[in-house]
Image (cartoon, rainbow, N blue to C red; front, side):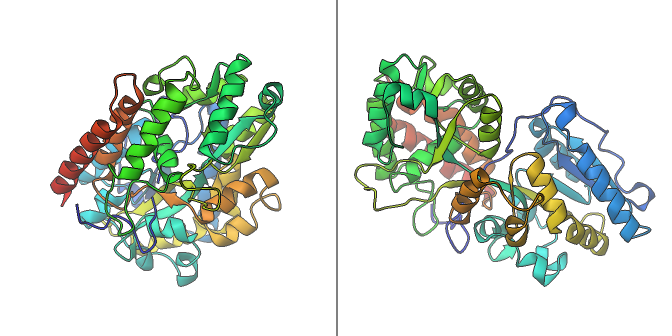
Length: 429
C-alpha cells in the first residue's frame, strides 16, 4: 500500500480518550433553528457530577456577552454514539456547525469541512503542538483542530515493586520481564496488565511495536502492520509475558482497558500503560504511582528513545450551513488559553496548544502531568488523517489479541490484519 498516511513528520491518534457516558441529550435534528451556532460535542464526564455541561454553559454564555447576536447551542453525546450520530446528521442535511469527537478525516475527504486557515487567526492556527497539527492535517491542510490530548507512559505500583524487591524502573524488555516475574512470585494478580481486548487494543499494540522500532507505518508513512519488527514484538510478548503467566489470569484478548485501569486502582496490577487521569485517580485511592517511558526491546537498546503514543480529540467545522465567520469567532474564543486549560484540567488531560501548555489554569501543569506533556511533544499519533483508519483501527482492536493466544501465530495474525487494512484502504481511495 503506497499511500502516505502520515503528515510531514510521522504521527499517529486515539479515538475517545475517556469512558463513555450512557444516555444522550437532545434530538440532533434541529440544526439551523433561530440562527444559533450548533456544536455537537462528546461528553467527557462519566457521571452527572463530572459532566462537560458546566464548562460549555460558561463558555457559550461568555462568548455571547462578547459577541451579541451570536448564540451557541451545545448538544452532548456519549462517546459510543457521537461518530455515528454526527455522520447521520451530515447525511440527512442537518449537520451541526461544529463537532468535537474522535475522528474527522472521512468528512475532510468528502470536502465537508472548513480548513483551519478559513476559520482561525494565523496566530491561533500556528499555536497547536506540532505532532497534533500533523495528525489533524490531510496533505498540508489542517482540518481537524486538536482540542485536548494525552500521551501514554508505563505506570507501576510503588508499593508492589517494593514488596517484590524491584528497585528500579524497567528500561528494557528484559528488565520488564524480570520485574513481572518478581511481582508474580509475590502473588500480584496482574504483574503486567496487557489490555488487548476490543475496547482499545490498538493503543497497547502500538506502544509495544514502537518500543521495538516498529509501529503502524514505515519511514515513508505507509502502513507496515506486518513488518518484521512487529512480528518479532508479538513473538516476544507471547513467549515471555503471556505464556509465563506474567499478564495475569485474564486472557489479554479478553482484557479491556477500563477493566485493567480499574484493577490498577484496586492495587491488583504491578505495571500497565496509562494516561494522566488514571494516575490522578489511582493516587486519590491511595496507590503510589510512578510513571516512566515504556521499556525498549533489548535489540533496540537503551540508547534509543522511541516515541510515546499520543492521543487527541478533534474539533471540526462543517460547511453545510455556511456560517464560516461566526464559527471562526467562536473557535478563536474557545481556543483561548483560559478556556482550553480549564477544560483540560477538569479531566486531567493536556491542552493542545503551545501557550496553554505553558500557562494552564491554576498556574501550570503539576509535575506529574508535565511528564506526559514532555512525551506528547515528540509523540506519534494514530493515522487519523487517513479516512480508512477507523476501519483499520477496528480490525486491529478485534484481532491483535489473537497473536498472543496459546495457539496464536503472531506472523499469521499480523498478515491477516495487514490484508484487511489493505482492502479497507482500497475502498476509501
